[in-house]
Amino acid sequence: MIAIFGTGPGRRPLQPHRLTGAARARLPEACTVLFQSNDEALAGFTTAEVEVFNKLLERLIANLDHLVRNDVGGQ
Image (cartoon, rainbow, N blue to C red; front, side, top):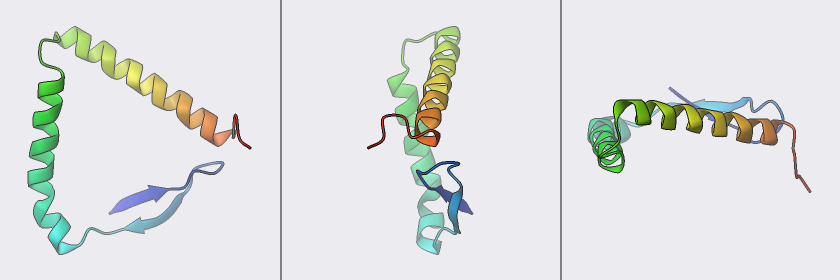
């Protein structure tokens, strides 16, 4: 099951969604492509650099979530 989140305050799940049979069948291929692309994008990075990069992305996502939850810059 996949939860789709709204963009308003609290970002509650809108409705749980289930993958169709066709989507489930293609999921392994999609995961393979995703991980391969990730490996290619991070080629040459050390393990320590990847860990720092991931932590920075987590902080960025948390900041963006905060902005959305608090409607910072909203019209």
